[in-house]
Image (cartoon, rainbow, N blue to C red; front, top):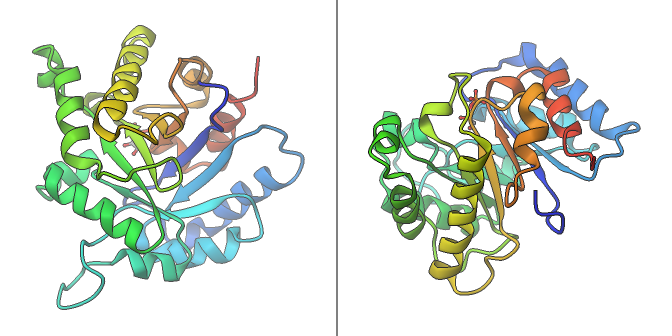
Amino acid sequence: MTTSIRPLIAGNWKMNGTSASVPELVAIGKAFTHGFDVQVDALICPPATLVARAHDVLSSTPVRVGGQDCAITQSGAHTGDISAEMLKDAGAGFVIVGHSERRTDHGETNEIVQKKALAAWRAGLTAIICIGETQSQREKSLTLDVLTAQIEGSVPQGATASNTVIAYEPVWAIGTGLTPTLPDVAAAHAHIRSELSRHLGEGFETIRILYGGSVKPSNAQELLSVQNVNGALVGGASLKASDFVGIAEACRPA
Ligand code: 13P
């Protein structure tokens, strides 16, 4: 973790959560409000159906709320889609774009992801742009090339620390319990930092680069101590308040 950048611990609830999950949101909000002394930003991205509820429950706490995807356009005849402006209106401050599950399940290309990031900015949201290699790309030693292409294709010019977060999520590590070795995490994050510099020219130095993929309380400390790891994007372990808070506590300086 680069000490000058305040870490962000973000929870991606994916397609999980109903009104029965509201008490979990309340518990997360409470944990970060009372006696939580770790210098960290916290964010929960529930399904779109819960964004407004999450905002109601969390707006009096330090925990922010985000969406998991947004449409490219602001409004119109796009049945089932939700715009960045709608997420903002419901209380979101962030939106994840280009998650590998969107890239795979919905055929989202780098070009689409870049347009979604621009849509997020248009609405005043911070875009969390996800990148990461698949297992077969990794086996062919293509990881760094894939990251370069995804940064060039998905990250719009004008990205800064206030409008953009990058999430490095190796696809093979998502939901599998597998994680890259710490040197591999360090190499990927260093590469992302230097590619952001090449791609953006300026503004890249303080952009947060999160690691995502099977982060849990028991491995968070070692992953978050890697240089250029500025937080985590957490799937499964973010559904339980105690696990999510346990991951955030791993950001406590040793
Ligand atoms: P898991 O933490 O469940 O592996 O999911 C990671 C992820 O995809 C977060 O966006």
